[in-house]
Image (cartoon, rainbow, N blue to C red):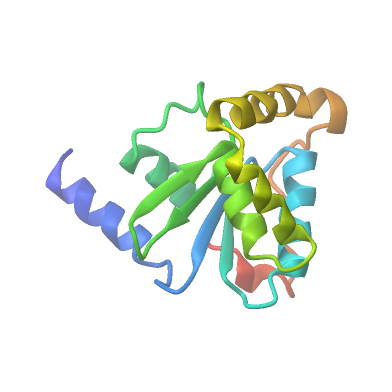
Length: 151
């Protein structure tokens, strides 16, 4: 990776406070948008920031971690403190863990082998547009929600 590009990538990713985690989601997916609104409503400790996968920061993180978006068109959870990325069912369950009761009970599914969890996740992801629909463009947050989004 070119050093000027690496510097730009670090600057973009450094915009994420170390005490937050960034949830990257499919900005045109109705199910994904509903899930983001669900998480925002229950994020009482304000642990999360949000950005569409299609955003500038989404693209930078995808490139940094060499994510093949044809293979992984899912929710991504970036932890700037650990400089780590989780995705698919593990990301969803780690998010649920921080959303309080009763949502955090879903973390019990972490005992299920990842291959099985991701098979279910992939099945839902593959059918999400058919079942829940798709927007023409990414969600535009209301002024009240704008502070929870990063671009």
